[in-house]
Image (tube, rainbow, N blue to C red; front, side):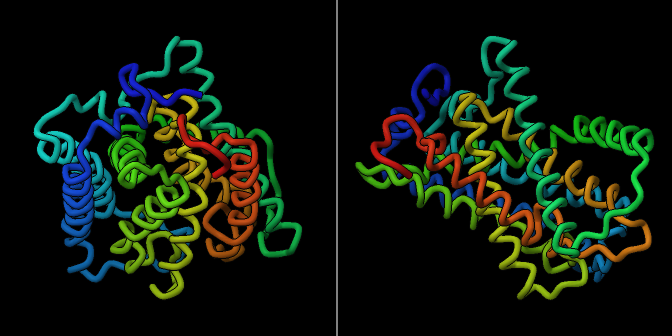
Length: 309
């Protein structure tokens, strides 16, 4: 499996960047991405906004703030590529391209939908099996219609998730692979997952992903969730040589997967994301099993990395 950006294998291209420039780029990227998130969330933090229920929607101000925040990683990646390296082709450096040929691009994007969908269904089934997920009465026509609407909404939101994945998969993960002359995939997965999770700190404080939970519960839970889901996104990025499938998968997990949790649940039951869906312990078990399979079969190992992950 070859991971390429503009026809050049990923590891070879990362090696071409001097260590000092790579470290400077990493700090520059993280600084812009994190500062952008906090600045975008500032109006909500100042207003005292807090989400107290998983069924609670977001208002117009929250939607605008979230949209701006999601472009912060992309901005950080572009700034790091253009200035830390003394200039460079952004699209080539961040793997911003369609998988070729077009038939493959379609297959990769369908995989990016099917895999998170399967993981979500498995997590909900596990939660229901142990009595933690309250399944409601399901009407096939109604569920199909709402899921179709959710899929349309997911497609519309893709540019926002592109803003995130250009940073995490396009920039940060490949740069963390290298440590001098060594390649350290496990470190890259763990550090990228932790950075991805902690970037959400302002929203976690306001109950965004885990409404009703204190920060000292939601922050560790988010670290676990992001560390487990990140290899799934990375696998899609590695097998295609493009960030696009990772963008599609991220959009599904953050929108349609959450919608499935609400859609299949008893409408009168309380929803706790810590105990259901991909952000709860049932999802952690399901994702851990899938990631273990990917690692065991060598699907998480970038080109040129000897041995197992």
